[in-house]
Length: 133
Image (cartoon, rainbow, N blue to C red; front, top):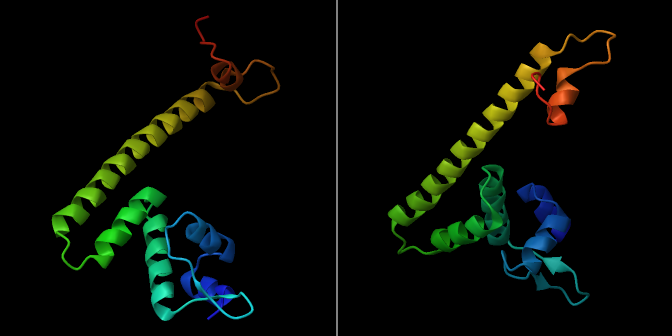
């Protein structure tokens, strides 16, 4: 199948497929006599694997390691689990950061009167000023 069909079947854009090929995440596609890329069902399966891993937030580097583990039938599941647990820790850290951002924004919006006056704790907070200053 051509790159457009592979993109459709994998939910990865043709541009992203070419990018993954250029960075070595996937092997270069075979080419027809006229130079068009062709993809097998196995290639599409690999692209789906990548898409799913990326949708879970794994970095390209981690996806590369996951692909190596996926292809290695002698892998230790402990290695896969360790990689996944490290990602869980990173996600937990990100959740904490997002929660702190949300809390700060809520605090600023609660202190803002939202009326016609020019003073605004949101703007002052973004400028690094405190209500006490």
